[in-house]
Length: 415
Ligand SMILES: [Zn+2]
Ligand SMILES: [Zn+2]
Image (cartoon, rainbow, N blue to C red):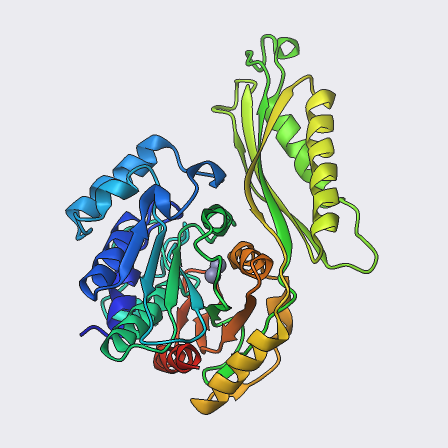
């Protein structure tokens, strides 16, 4: 029997980016099928057309082949080909009881993991084997907890049915919104999404984090015309200038009184050489707000700035929505259930850390769907001491948090 820590370390060594979680998802599906759970995966677990920011086919294929060579489960891999990496696993209860749904996200981040000797995954031999990808948010721990929980529940089934939603592509807000419309969460009475860390110490539990921000992630591609930069610059239309002008303009996006808002340009790229007017450039940006309508307004203004920057430099611009997350509110009954379960297993119930309120998580798409079908939902912060901040090369969490997380979830499921 593998513990949450065993699973976590295996996944930490094999981090996969959003919609390429072929090894992770197929092994999860295999483990749960072996335990006798009903497993739904592939296009049945996620509406293909609702996915945003799906990687290019060549990237998907390379990741698929790597998973096939490195321990992916051949029973489940074929259905996932092309980025259909969601898994929903269900256990029927032993009698009558409330239906519980849990979310575990599976994706890693495009970060090169620290190779420093002070970084525990490196020191203890479970650092990422795949350079350029890293579990730097704790999702490896989320999957580990869910799988140890599944083993315990199989051995001694709870009264009501349990469903675990293994979600791809949380980073970027792309997977939850594609899983929600399958309707697989409909009929769930209590839905809980747990996230490790979030500036809470080991042993602490925040039963409802309400301030999650809505966000929109955009990719803008400026198109111009190349020319010799010295012989005929007047013939060129410089796409990089469009990207640069837009970046500066976006930093001046208006603030909104009474609301938390954010805007960020995280990447600009374009051009090939110093003596060629660049004919293409790309900008990756995001807006966030504590209200969906405010975020929609910021997104519209950002799009106007991108169009304006293009016009200013004689360019065209294509703007694509590559991720979006909505807000959600916790239900008091769900918060109370998590609070009671947490206290029963010895966790210390606390308020969310102030900085977790500006995070986003597209579990909100699943929460909203549960709420729309009459269930209750909450987003939970499970404390874990961190060696480095989320989304950085030195990120690591206290694995002691995993055992208490499994205890918490088991208690919650058993009611
Ligand atoms: Zn993250
Ligand atoms: Zn995360």
